[in-house]
Length: 141
Image (cartoon, rainbow, N blue to C red; front, side, top):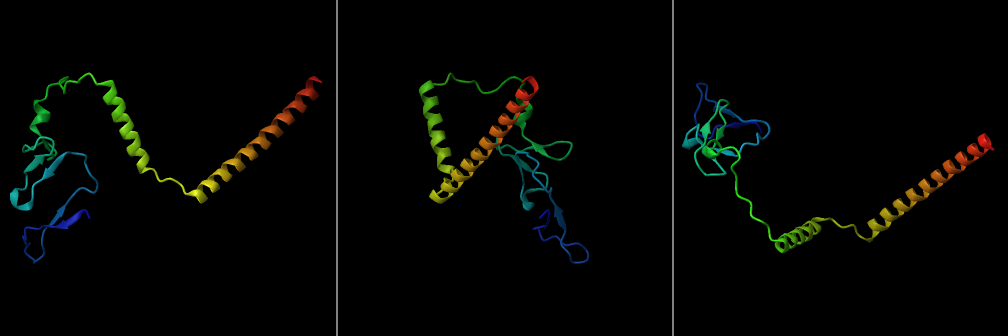
């Protein structure tokens, strides 16, 4: 997947088409390379839509990143508390719709596993408590 044939139809001397190599995993940059006919170095910054300028390593960055001053950003409004609560509840309902709920058989199985584990821990802690009580009575008797 990292090697793809060049789509321009350019051929090397022996009849094979040139191979374009691409990185094996995403770099996280928000720029899109131009198509083969648009120019090799042209890239578009997806955030602003402006042409990106190349950097030392060849990746493009938008002009908005260079012109923004440190400490500047979008001004924050004072949020409406009712709108905040309403938005939060809508997000909770949206997340609950994504949950894969267990059916009745799965729920019975999960409940049985939990109860069996609780019974095991009850017996284990009871035996340790009984043993320590006997040990303390034997030592301090």
